[in-house]
Image (tube, rainbow, N blue to C red):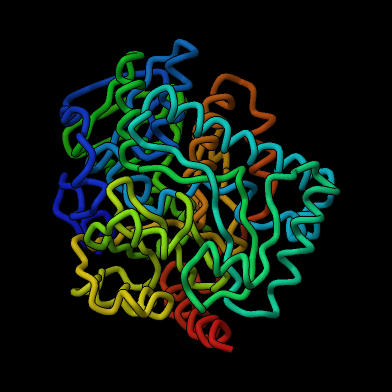
Length: 433
């Protein structure tokens, strides 16, 4: 089964609140015939769009392909949270790669947030970037670490935009008895991800990027020049960037062994009054909790609660996404038991074993960037920029990200699914302890 077509109609956006409130660019034509370019990018999500925009700014002739539409995948379906740092916290990174390397990874991640904010302001002001992410501890034993981590970041990294929250403070900010403390990071924020993707696409097209939609890549020959084939076109390119994340499939087996697709789901409620909205989240902040199967939520500009969670590890989306997500939503907010859900949708993201992005130079002229593990709004934007730098012969920062080891999942492509399901059962049990 091809995950690109397992759950959605070809070339159609999902029934999300994002698609309901965003005007798409184009539509762009399907790739046809024999084409050539300096750089062919596969995947028109944040990574591919950012790479295309930055390469066009350097004068490269760029073709950008997508099997469906611009921003169709995880980039246009996610929770919209623009988190600071890497997917792993700095303590874990220091243990993994050492202090100096971890510090450089932090600096890159902070650049990713700044880049995302700047690009959104320039090309997608309607994405409505707003500052503030609350990290909520679902167990009291986790609160001391949140407090200590805030102090560590101020002391060791000079980062003072994150502050700890005790139980009273978090209950003032989040109207739920489910949380015992946490922190609030004003360096991060949230936005409308699909509007952001559309803004990047319009900016890239204005710089001369040739965007082709409904152009599924069926083959890649990693030679110099490389050849990328679709059902209706053959593209000859000096360089190729694979920006497919969870949708890479069997196009590049080496990457696929390290990046696994998983599904996640979001609902949007009916609009609330501003007064009622404040009883759930005080201030226009996003929230993410400490569960391994994370719950994340925020309000839209039209006062709907956007609530995400309930991952699944099969190819197929469940028939009733709203019912699936309502369960964790009402566990946190029991008062929403009878609220009307107006939109429910799923998406596929790419995760790695250690939850760090997978950057790889597959051949001298073929790069792959993926595996953001739920932390991709900012890091995918930066990933595209770093891939563009590498194409231009400035690969130091791309190589820094690539030097973080991301091992293949055990069991190969066939057995990793059941092994991951077993692991998730364990983590779900641990979340309840």
